[in-house]
Length: 327
Image 1: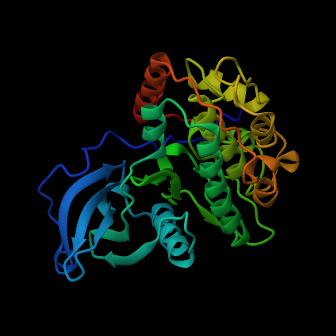
Image 2: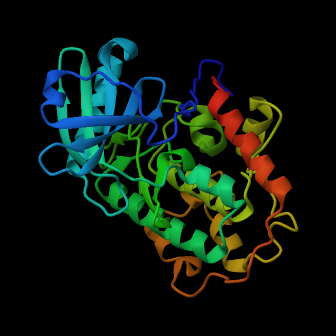
Image 3: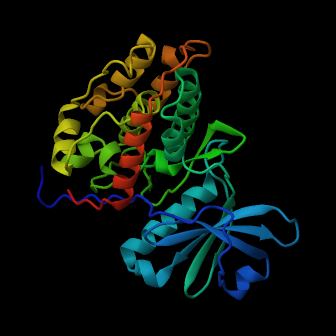
């Protein structure tokens, strides 16, 4: 592992519950169009608010980026401009839409669709894990969106349950959010920056010893799929070093009883994504054709969810929120 390779865990900090009223001051340019109702999320460099459009009475989510907090140097400005550029050009039912951008001297306001069901991670914690049929629907939606992005030469680079939002009415309808680490590539270009979130990051990013491409997103989908089905991630340890060593060797298992009733097709799907060599890893297009994602192939057997599994998930959530790592 390269000593100078760095990777930051961008997990969000605990946030107030949606609907909890909090006095919020926004600039005139935003106040003219929106009533800010409450804070619904907060990260290291931004906050997300529930807002009502004054004319239409439609609810929106407004992501507020404080320029002073992030330090608008060339690197950070490029990251924000890239996120905005990507959101402006994409249109897919499983990617959160950007409706407007309002920029002032001190802030950037991203006006986005309100996805009211919260993070997929919280749903996994609450449920223990998804049924295989539910997980199949969720993963098919994610892979469809990533296939769309890759065909438009966009790599997300930070896919994780915290960046997948669900609707209250249907917790299998996921929408990809947070494109802060995403990149727009030319057909021949590759990336070399070590970034992402430890539990979900691909081995080729961890090494930072060379270039990597869009298949880093497929590794992350493999981790998310495993998490959905088992209720815990495939790579776990008492510290970052242990997690990294497991990732580098793709050292994971399908332990009973958590995987007893999971189909062979589901295990095959995960196994073809959690492959160390990206050249041997499925692409998004290939993943969409895998038998497990075909309608009616996923098992419908009921899952046995234990309280200990739910508590374990809650522990992982707390660790994710508090952990700041450098590789």
